[in-house]
Structure formats: structure tokens, C-alpha cells
Image 1 (tube, protein in one colour):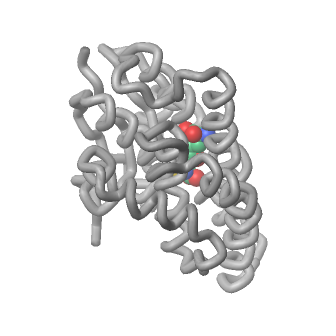
Image 2 (tube, rainbow, N blue to C red; image 1 turned 45 degrees about the vertical axis):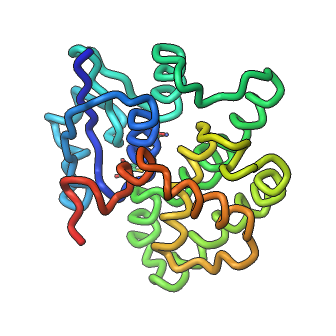
Length: 212
Ligand SMILES: N[C@@H](CCC(=O)N[C@@H](CS)C(=O)NCC(=O)O)C(=O)O
């Protein structure tokens, strides 16, 4: 299976997919998309993702988009190691954790939203407050879930899709200098997950297009 991941080093959604691919032990080619230069809006990328968002995953020439759909596809296609728990109720808890990040925090803090706020002449301090507000709201719900269900990782004692969503969101929170003190369980779980080689390899700083 030939996999090509269209990714941007610092972006959350491709970071989720990099973690999934690495945890499944799947090799892939990395195709960088420069979000700052606006490559996601260009004609060439449109054929890969008509939403003009990363990631896009080429699979033997066919294209998948939407990071959660890609992660679910990976889980179905390569079941081992499992990134969802065996128990059906537990699986839904992991999916709930993913949803809090991917449906309720990330979309309102995405680059295009922050650019739209700037076009409305919202200043940087107010934009930072906006970003913090939505991360804080989501993390306030996630913190007791991780405290209850995490046993080294966000859920249980091995990586799940919850880690694939949480790691990038914590990276993003740090980038926006959010105070993570109120979220000790989230911090502990993500610090522990960061030690996992497959997860460490997915970190933004380790991508070929990283600019720091
Ligand atoms: N729901 C989508 C979100 C994808 C998304 O928002 N990607 C961001 C990077 S994390 C992006 O491409 N942003 C470009 C922009 O806002 O112009 C997914 O999970 O794949």
C-alpha cells in the first residue's frame, strides 16, 4: 500500500494522522503543504481536498480527507495495534474525547478562523483570549475524563485515538501560551505519551517542513 500524507508540520489535524500512521507502523511519503504561503488554497491542492484543509492521505492514488475519518479507516484497515478499546462503551468514550477536541475546540481556533477575526480587525490579545477560551472549555470537560480513564495515556494504558487528538491540541495550547496548570491529568498523559517513539516521531519539530 503506497501512502502519501499531505501535511503541515505544526497543524493539528495532520499531526493526528501522523500519530495514527506511526502507531500502526505504516510507512508513508510526506508531502508538505505550506499553510502560511496559502498552498492549501491553490488549484493543485484543490484536487486532493476540496475543503482546502490538511490533511489529505493518498492511498494507492485514491484520496482520503478528514483526520477522524482517516483514523477510523486506519483502525478498520490495520486493526493491530488497536487504537480503540475492545469494549463498546469504552470505544465511545474514546470517540467522545476525540470529538471534544476535533469537533468543539479545533474548528473554532483553526487558521482560517483566526485570519477571519484579524480581517474583522480583532487585535492579537483578543484573538489569544478567543483561542484560550475554547481550549479551556474543552479541556475542562476532558480533564476529569482523562483523570478517570487514563492509566498512562489519555484512555487506558496504551495509545488510543484520544491521544492522537489530545497531543496536537496540547501542543497548540502551549503554542498559544495557555496556562495548563488546571489540567494536571491532561499534562501528565500527554507528557507520558510524548515518550512513545511512534508518537515522538509525529511531533511537529520532527517533520521535514519544520521551520524551527
Ligand atoms: N476537520 C478537518 C479539519 C482540517 C483542518 O482544519 N486543517 C487545518 C490545519 S489543522 C488547515 O488546513 N487549516 C488551513 C486553513 O485554515 O487555511 C480534519 O480533521 O481533517
